[in-house]
Length: 340
Ligand code: ATP
Image (cartoon, rainbow, N blue to C red; front, side):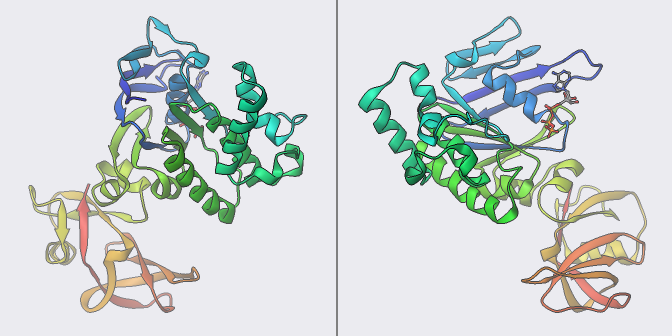
C-alpha cells in the first residue's frame, strides 16, 4: 500500500467550465479522506478519476511511485486494486448475499475453500454471517449497504472509494453505519476516500477533510483543525454550525478574535468590515454582554437552538438549556470568533 497523490488534477468536459481545476492533495496510507462540498463542486468527478472511470485532462494521479493516470493515459479500473461502493449499493438481485460478496473473487478465479473462507471473513466484518443465503431483496437498506461494503473488502483493495454511500439511509441507520465504516476502516487498513455533502458524516468518520467548491480544493485538514481554523467563507459556512458576521475589526489583528475586540466592533461599528465566524457554543447568556433579540427558539431534545439578531440586523446562532421567549432582547457574550 502507498500514499495516493493527486497532482494538479483537472477535468474539463468541454462544457465551458472545468468540473475539477488544479486539485493537489495527498491521502496518507491508511487514511480516511472525506471529499466534502455542495452539489456540483466536482467531488464525484475526482472520485471517478481515481477509480479510472474518467481520464484527467491535466495533472496526474499516483499511488506511491506508480502513475495511475495523467492526460496521456490511464490504467484501467481493474488494474488499480481499488473497490468502489455506490449510493445505490449495486447488488445483483438474483444472487445470494454470499454470492454477491464473493463475485469479485470469482472474477479473479478464486473458488472452493479459499472462496468460502474469504467470503465468511468479509461477512463477519460487517456482521452479516447469518444472512449469507438471503437475497438482497430480503434485506434492509443498511444491511444491503453492509453487503456492498463486504463485497469491496473481500479483494483486500489498496483503496476503497465511497460515493455518498449513506445518502439513502435514515438518521438512526446513518449513525449505526458510520460506526460500521469506522470499524471497517480500522479492520481493513485500506485507504478510504468518501464523497459526501454531509459535513456531520465527514466529521464523524474521516481522518482528513478536503473541502471543494466550484471544482477547486479550498482546504484540507483534520476534522478538529478544519472546525477550529477554517479558511475562507466557503469552508467556514460548510463545516460545523455557525454564523458569519461582517464586523469592523482592526487590520492585522489575530485570527482568533477575543470578546473584548468583538465587543468593541459591536459597540462602535466603523471602518472596513471583516468576515468573522461565530460558533453557537461561543455565544453565551451573560448580563455584561451586548443585547441581542431572540428571533426563534427551537427544542432539539438535549437543548434549545436559538436564532439571535444584532442591533445591526446580523444573525447568530446559540444554544440554551431552557426555552427563551421570542422577540425579547437579552444580553449575550461572544467568547471568541474566527477571522475567515
Ligand atoms: P453531486 O453532489 O451533486 O453529485 P458533485 O460535487 O459530485 O455533485 P460532479 O458530479 O463531480 O459534482 O460534477 C461536477 C461538474 O461537472 C458539474 O457541473 C457536472 O454537471 C459536470 N459533469 C459531471 N460529469 C459530467 C459529464 N460526464 N459530462 C459533462 N459534465 C459533467
